Image (tube, rainbow, N blue to C red; front, side, top):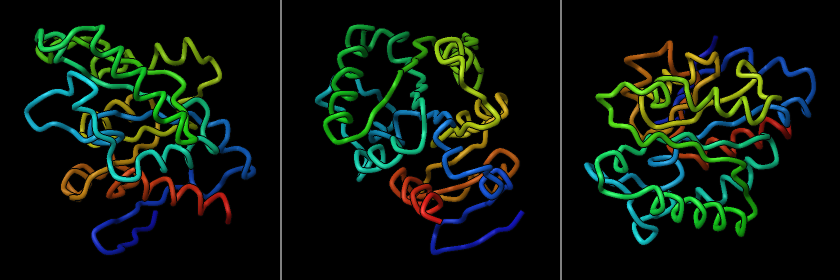
Length: 207
């Protein structure tokens, strides 16, 4: 394992990224993405309950266009307890999801499936991250998924735990290295944003 520092971002490289059988191998890996804070801007102490509140993170659309060349399927797994709190409906979430997917497609990217958990945190639902229910649902729909060959990208510790429980490599999206420094066993790589991660993957492909 080696550690490299570059400005405010560090990368922890594991053999997974260095021992591909071929460059095409990465095409077979699933990519799991959290939504809020990764694809779109998170509303602090609130919820995106309509598309007017949905704002893509900087260069997230460009990032998804790049990543679509290297991963299949691309799956969003998102906790949405705003539904469970009655602050939005399942229909509200569906409208946001469909418009998000359309915007991503129009920008050259793709999302193959979105899974969400509406349950309240205190219920400790099997489908709510860090529990693994949404990941297992994804594998039932996409039986080609091999978790050990897949990545989980998120901005919260619960995303990292979710990924590790499924034996995935975990990528933290955060402008602060705090989680990665406190919990290094859960974070394999860290980037400031999804676009930096996408460019890293693209450069690895070229090499």
